[in-house]
Structures are given as C-alpha cells and as structure tokens.
Amino acid sequence: MPTMKGYLYILKSEKTGGYYTGSSDNPERRLVSQHNQGFVRSTRTGIPWKIVFKQEYNSLEIARQVEYKLKKLKSRIIVERIIEEQTCKLKVC
Image (tube, rainbow, N blue to C red; front, side, top):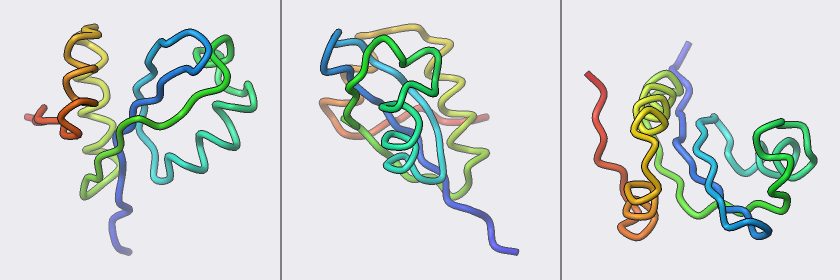
C-alpha cells in the first residue's frame, strides 16, 4: 500500500485574524467540511477561515510531526514568516 501524502496547512480567520495550524491528507476538504462548519472546537469562534499556507510532505506522519513542532514554538512571528515566504523550513528529527 502506497504512503498517503500529507499536508501542513495554516488557516487564517477572516473574523478574528487569528491563525490555526493543522495537518491533513486533504486540507481543502477539512476546511469546508469541518473547520468552517464548526466541528473543530479550536476554530469554531473564528469562522470563516481560509487557507493561507499549504505544504506537501511525503506522508501524513511527517506533516503531523512538523505541525507539532510548529505548534510547540507558539510564535505568531514564525507563522507569519512561513505564510509570507510560502515555505516551512522546519525539519523533523
């Protein structure tokens, strides 16, 4: 069975201006069917959301590891730099 591609994505709330970082095999589907429908507790108050960054990885597991690393940094400055440069240079060990 081939490995499923994974994506790191960053959403921006059109209501609050806040950011949400996530990983998925299909960020567009997750945005439409879950984030903007209020099914994700942490994004419920910021509806509507839009995808402002998306980066593909060879597997969902790697994308999730990068997501975890980025969330641990807790830095809006780093998130905004990633969006501006449209690349995430964080590596997984």
